[in-house]
Amino acid sequence: METVHKIGRRKTAVARVYVSQGSGNITINKREFKNYFTTPTLQYKVQQPLMLTENLEAYDIKVNVYGGGVTGQAEAIRLAITRALVAINEEDKAVLKPEGLLTRDPRMVERKKFGQKKARKKFQFSKR
Image (tube, rainbow, N blue to C red; front, side):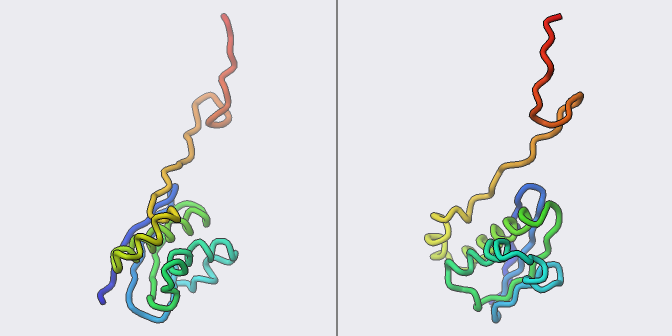
């Protein structure tokens, strides 16, 4: 099997994932996966597609990720890994799609409006 390259995005985070046959090593930005994401929640998010398809120790995964915060990066990596697993084995799609792992989350931060403190603060109404 050759290396499969896929991209995942979430908010402003972009993750490039390279999946190859291996023993289950996950490297993110040349750091070990557990050192990059220290909280168990983020570690679970990254490993979720591998757990669902029972491939935790079947592939070596190399990730380059930039932009956004840690949660956005974790979800971008999850999307990229999911896309790579479906590219490798089309039958995994039946397991991953109902979990909502194949859909890109389109929600973005609303821009700040000029003359206002935040994006959603209402303008002061004046009759004159």
